[in-house]
Length: 220
Image (tube, rainbow, N blue to C red):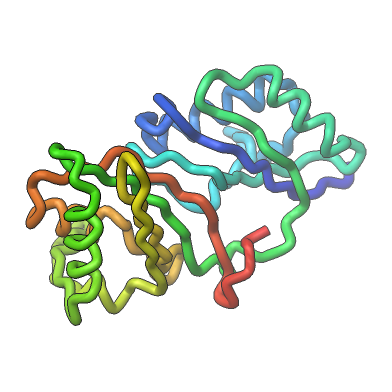
């Protein structure tokens, strides 16, 4: 039987943001099974379904652009996959589209994030100025931990792009950072450092809004 690889794109929001990456994997696998999608299983003594998650999402993050890959028979219509999965998804998870891959996974290079911050005293003018001064610093040194060690990195040099916008109730911070197999920078490294020196500020929400290629094209 001829098979093809498809990418299933979905949103993760609300209480689902606090489901770990591993539990999200399990949830999506159960959803595929409940939807009775004829996905491809590996061969051998202990076959398991072929499902690949492109880019792990940190705990507490919402996302508009999560995706996973499965292999299905050529005869299965992409619209049918969407309808079947939408019929079994629970609150917080929303299937947005299904498409054949356009870019290779290795082409994924950047992620865009939107962080919403506020102050206890609702003084958004002061928050905006403090955040602007912080990001204008020549260097922002943070401690980056790995499984075996930790090292100090200058997160400012990793910041590809940023933008700050003030609203009536909060301040929105847009960040573009490296992501993927070659380099992956968690935006909380920068945000936590700002919160450390601005103790009256809090992070209300953070969302991954887009993933991009080296040329800053949408990863498809």
